[in-house]
Length: 206
Image (tube, rainbow, N blue to C red; front, side):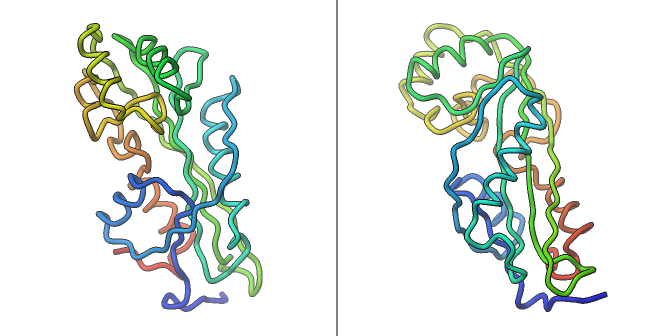
């Protein structure tokens, strides 16, 4: 089996998300950050497939895609409720509508991940691996005061579903079932498994 020196291959996060960076750092990984800029798709297609599609799109858009000296990590988090898919709000009224819709109800938080790196069975090819994690979050019934307080905080900006569970958004949550880190933006248990199963020949786990 052709091997790639672990010291040569670098994990590279193709995301500008500070939350994903913090989760990787907390897990002890050494990595680079090289965001890939793409237009994410929000549609009524299967939300798991949609999250994976967006994650793959980011990896394929990276300047390092196909580089055997990199293991690229792309991720995309979306919120699904009934037949609706929520991405990032475009403004405060968009955030208000999302939070009002989720008030008192349970929604899914889905993070699709995609990794691309050297194929262990090839001298010159890369392999692409995708998966997704799903958590369930139940919101409290949001009072007008709590809703206004959260919207005024501006924490909702740039957040899927218009909230951040690791911040003030924790006040909105009544119950979480599943992976907390998935809701933050990167399911670390799943990520570690994907690395172990597909890239253990070139990436050492911390």
